[in-house]
Image (cartoon, rainbow, N blue to C red; front, side, top):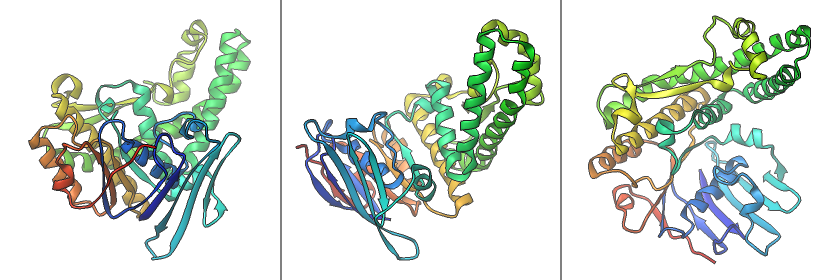
Amino acid sequence: MLNSILHKNLRGLKNNEHELERTTHIVGDNGSGKTTILEAVTLLLTGKTFLSVNKNNLIRTNQSQMLVSGRATEESGQNKDLRFSIDKQKNNHTVNEKRISQEKAHLQNPTCIVDANIISISSGVPAYRRGLIDRAVFHVEPSHAKNHREFKRCLTQRNRVLSKKRPQQEINAWNEPLALAGEKISKARQDLLMEAKPYFKEVTNEMLGSGYGFSFVRGWKAKTYLESLLKNEKKDVILKSTSRGPQKEDFRLLCLDKKTKIYSSHGEEKLASIAFVVSLNMAIEKRKKILSTMLFDELESGLDNNGLFKLVNIIKSFKNQILITSLVHHSVSKKIKGNILYPEQN
């Protein structure tokens, strides 16, 4: 559990330190910095942010360094000091004054993030959903990152050979290593999705009723990925790129076997999308035997009273540390007991 967080020169926020409880509400108007507090928490725990691609954008204008620090208590009762800083040249993430890699921090401190783009799980592009499932798999499969790097390397080389119309043996040289890495990535995704399915059914039954599910769309139709690469080789030569593989995979949220974005209302789409993220998180927690930190950004937006009531009941059952942002006129901070903090702009 993260007990406190201090931030200096973080975007437009006033330098401040906040005490956190098991449930903490971050309340303010639009533009007050609510989401930035959640961003600071993810930086401190994982070394990553779910918003900014360029971390230098986190540094306040006219400042040279940004700092986030805090103290956490492990399940054993031991305290640890966390620190994350960014300057123009480098990032520095430490635990008890020892550097920690982003990959290790990500594995040690799982986070479950329900952000403002959550409905993209239902109606967004496949790349968004692939990224979501891969981030979940990274938590439970340390080799997943290595497999991704190997797959990207082989895919780049195979596409280069295809685009330059190199001899057949050069294409063949990349087929097997590409297929091996691709099969591992696809299997890891499918395994975690299968583990999440019963949780998804349980959560959607409580919030939306029966009839909801999801399906995985594999990136090739042949029995093995290698068979698919060989079968589609002529097509790939014409396209000058690899047309099948995990880079084409997707999953679909369904209601009565139809896509939720077609069948469901906006509020139902949001609830189904939240249920999917929560179910993935439950599968991760079961595998790792550790609770994640759960972050909900403007949880109440887009939900009617009935939908919010059912979602609140689900959240109340969690034992995780939870941070929830909301607008001043929202009621969720009254429905879920917790500490309230108000971000201030500089």
